[in-house]
Length: 130
Image (tube, rainbow, N blue to C red; front, side, top):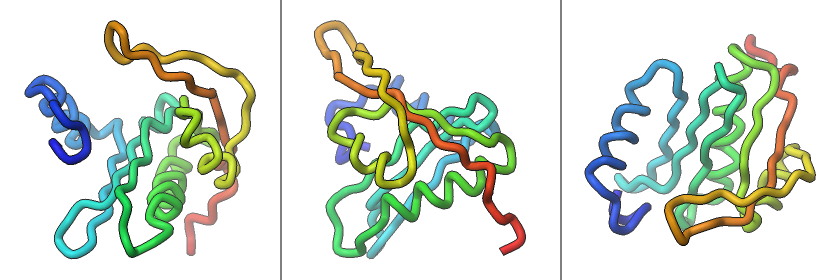
């Protein structure tokens, strides 16, 4: 946890642990050489893509793989996913088929605000028989 979020509090670690075991959430983890190199999280019942994070690695395309797998799993519950993407992640999501123009600011804690954009994607066309 420290590598992904320096200074993570016990409350935050507890929240993430709870989300991993909550059946409403989809949480995927990518590993290489016994190390976590990425994760993705969604709440399909709320049509919400929460996160796709990937560490620099030599595997390549980890973020795209995590997102595609998450979308396929979520498509069993919903036909659309929405996300609030940081501006530095916007190009990744757009390259993966997300669109939208509504900009917003997300307040993480007092004094820490991040410029973001609201994006969405139809995921209704997955072939669940493949």
